[in-house]
Structures are given as C-alpha cells and as structure tokens.
Amino acid sequence: QVQLVESGGGLVQPGGSLRLSCVASGFTLEYYAIGWFRQAPGKERAGVSCISSSSANSTYYADSVKGRFTISRDNAKNTVYLQMNSLKPEDTAVYYCTTDCAGVGSVWGQGTQVTVSS
Image (cartoon, rainbow, N blue to C red):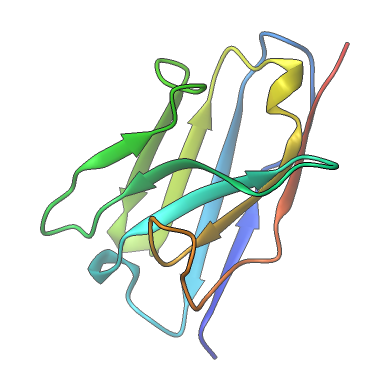
C-alpha cells in the first residue's frame, strides 16, 4: 500500500523545536520530491518546504520559515524530515507531507498537529 505517515508533532513553547518525520511505504521516496504543507484553523493549506528528488537534492522554503526550518531526507529510512526551530505561535497548524512541491501530489499523509503556545 502506497502511503505517507507523518509524526513528531506536539505542543511546544514559543522558541522551542520539533522535528517532523514523513515516512513512506509502498514506494521509494528518494525518487520523489517531497513537500511539507500546513493548514491552520480557518486558513488555506500553504506550502512550507520542499526537497527535490535525490538526483537533484535542491530545497525550497517559504519566506515565513526561512532560517528556522530545515528539510532533509534519509533514503535508508525512506523518510523526509522537517526540523523546526525557533517556533512561533503562527506556526501552529496541521502539517502534511505529500509527493510533490506544488501541493497536487497524489499521496498525502494524515497530518500531524503542531501547537506553539505558552
């Protein structure tokens, strides 16, 4: 079964850190671009970061997270990570990963909740 599973979300204080994981099963993740998106209550889903397939290995970050978030992949674990540092309350959202950078991927995870609050 082809699927993505996100994990690593939780409640963290402003300024804290979390590392999200996106684990693929049923396909080899290194051949795909993987994007992270987030959706806050009452807002549209927005792109956060993306990493190209391993052959190109380029990365993209939304302006709102540049310098704070880092995307990476571990092909041996079929996993893409999103390291999130210096978290702000406005980072609160459900975070999803998918199999492209434009948000039109055919495979999406179920999402993981990130809440930044004191």
